[in-house]
Image (tube, rainbow, N blue to C red; front, side, top):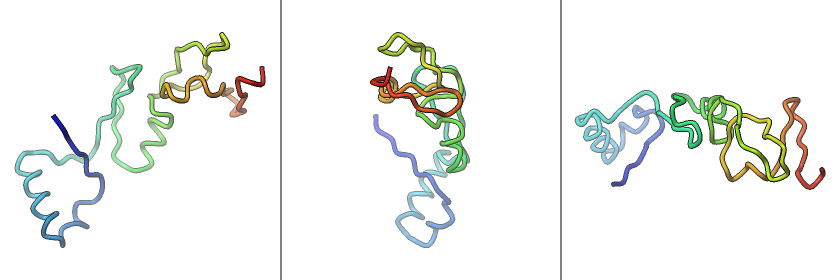
Length: 106
């Protein structure tokens, strides 16, 4: 099964016949909403709803949720940041004061 999310103001697309048809089909099947539910890969029970562009940075800035990361770094330290994606997990260690300490520096 495949899907697609269209994010934006549907009213701005109303003048283009193709988008008018697409939006009509989506509305018929009740597939238009004012927010998008995201899922944290590490904490899937934590709800994340975004409805404005800045919400992505506010509620899921590192691809995770607002909970603290519960993973151990390769160096043995516990991660001290908010939840984030695995891609960035072992690249750096962030302090709560906003100072970045790279793993190769300790």
